[in-house]
Length: 311
Image (cartoon, rainbow, N blue to C red):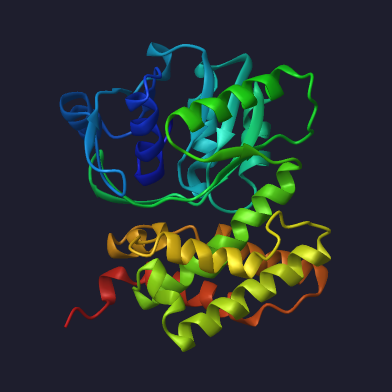
């Protein structure tokens, strides 16, 4: 597991709790010390527990593994891909559980044919309370997919085993064909939730309780769906807008990853989410004014943390 933030620790903690061998790869020595001493602490919708995990700075200490779960921010994908090379053997499955477009291609390019890259989307909600301390705020389905659904490939076999691991860890999980459709489907959820929560500072569930914020959510997702259609993408959800709102309700108490970034004065993934809709829309002649506005506003917020009024 590379990227021991909210989602990384959530999956690592539950997988370890279910009896699987999990190792974290970190870049922050101070967090390594905390996780080595205290393990991962998860509280929330399934109760509270701790899971003892190994956390390393050097991938060479781990060696080739069966599966690498990539949970870093999208702007760190290339750096992460270079770092995990010692972990990736010929049959290693590298699964991205990240937000936004371009991560699969970035991983495949950096790994240069080593291992197999798969993608996942999840409606699980998690918030970081401290290093290795996670609040599990809501449950939802997880889907994993490969670029080509070859039932005889080693990658497919490992992917099915990974689905079984996730199921045993308590995550409702299934395989979905056509990885590109899967990534765009996850993008629609993030397009509707992340920027809007970052700008309003509302929790996920509150977005659909206020007519104005719900209307903006509808418009942002609507633009995304128009761009997806123009791109030849098939969204895997029967009713994508309803799915986004269901995620809001199922993770109603969750603080979205982008809002967490804003509250902690960190760089956001806006360019890989709403910004990606704006770029793809421009390429295909689809207007995206709401997503363009969201992108500009979030960029302004993240570029002016040191200038913002506090009272």
